[in-house]
Image 1 (cartoon, one colour):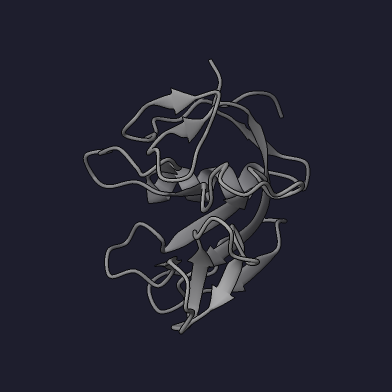
Image 2 (image 1 turned 90 degrees about the vertical axis):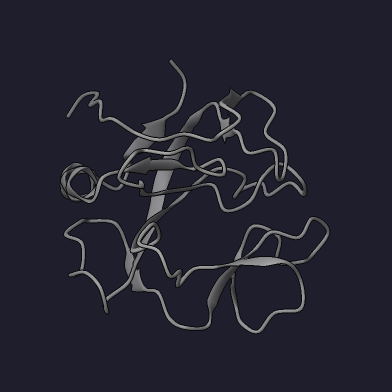
Length: 153
């Protein structure tokens, strides 16, 4: 298919070659689009060849360095620090889980680095990559099982 460019929001601390938990930076690299999570109560199921799952009320993502489920999806309630996937805002109406720090998963090198929806003004993220809903639908419709996102220039 080739390379495609879309306007996006990146982490408030810019991009980093040495991503660390909580630094607010988007990691440099090439990351596979692994799977899609979405809010069926807000949007239609995304059309894509990637695996797709619903986001439920008890879905979270562990961000506690040292926890056995660090950088993994978890069920709530959960005793360690985590992100709620069913957010009040619209940013996580579609989440694409990226391969960043997945295999191997290294404690402290960043968790919950997602490809998700951007704010209307493309305000910085906490370290993720974010695009408009329209662009997300376009990207997911075009991508294949080997598709990747590139955060390097």
